Length: 296
Image (cartoon, rainbow, N blue to C red; front, side):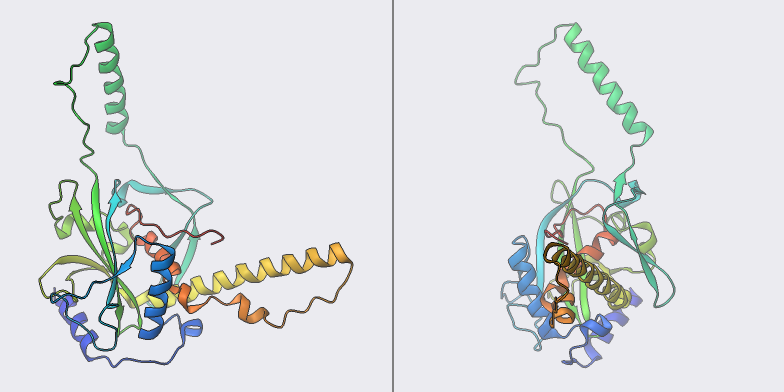
């Protein structure tokens, strides 16, 4: 909790910057955060800005109705520890390095079937077959709706960090019956590599009523975002060069000139949070929030 308290004081004492440097540093201003939030909530309707209520501690550098973004009841059916296999092709995963370093590994986490799960599946099949052999028919009174006891749900919040000048994610978890998860249980849905490095137990800073959460510490967000922004730019440049080559082959002309190339290759600041969500999936691989867009 000491780390949480220091983080809160740092947020309070750090002056707000309005200078845009997102392409060079990976950082954004409060105005750019609002712009990116508007874009994300329009692309992903499950995300929305906060409602204006008396229970919110407002920060004056953000509009009252745009203090934070929230999506609720996001399912999580598999714990992060079970997602240990990585295929060769799939989503990108950030692997932390030194204090300011890191690299992106392409792959997609797959749930690993444990021996007890395979055994349970076999036993279930055997029981079903035995009941058919004995001609046992279930009545309505005997029917039980199967309950996935490992299922959880999360409310996810994104707010602006003044001390790191990047978005900051908070997760609040619930059992499938609606009872809150403990901090230790929420940590089970954080990838093992991040639990001791970037995850922190905190109370949601924007609600006056205490709500326990786990935050994804933003100390490396800017560096990770810079890597991802550069990667997106390179992909766009490669696509443009392929189009140029196709144009030359089809027309025999070598007069393609695109004066907007550098601008078009760059990611727009309003798309920032879409890339941010893509990074967050490597930290919370079992929480099934929507972060994909066609062509990304």
